[in-house]
Every structure is written in C-alpha cells, then in structure tokens.
Length: 119
Image (cartoon, rainbow, N blue to C red; front, side, top):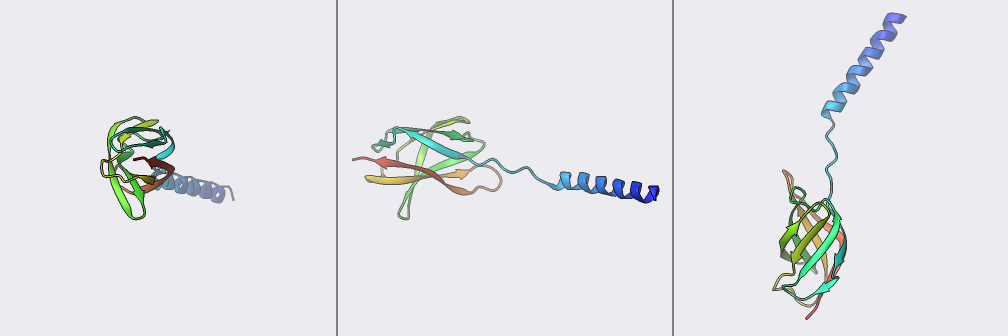
C-alpha cells in the first residue's frame, strides 16, 4: 500500500512539473487608460497613459473610425506613457485608438479610449 501511494505521489509530481514547463506565461496586453489632451488638431501631440506601452509591447498606434485606419507617428514611449502625433490626414471627428502589438505574433487591439480631432 505504501509503495502504491509513493508511486502515485511521484507520478503526480512528475505531471505537475511537466505541465509547468509546457505552460507559457500569459502575454502582457497594452492598455491605454487616458489621453491628454483628449482633443487636438492634426500634427499635435497626444500623451496617453496606461500600462505596457513601451516598444517591447507596442509597435504602432492607429486612429480608427468607420473603417478608416490612420497610422500615427509615435514620438516617445515608456511602460506607462506613449506620445503620438495626430496624423496630418485626420479629418475632424471622434477616433478610437488601436495598437499593433510588438513581438512574434503581432495583433491589432482596439483600446478603450477615444480622442477628438478638431479642425
């Protein structure tokens, strides 16, 4: 009985250890929480604060509205802040922000944040 219990414990420990090696850490997801200013004209710089906004997490930023996606020029970025320039071709209106993640499997992620482009 003791041998059987010992064998089962050894098998369980081996399975747990094997599953830990195969599990991959969840990737960190960039999140934009606020923009300052919340509105601006083409060419002006917007500062976004949030989490995981550095170059290892965010490759590109886009303004998106009604099927129109405009790539914004990133001026600077760190883990908590990202500054971008409103594209010159942006028309007045409300735009959602979207990021293209960096890394081996880049993904577009629409952010829970909007900005207003003024005339």
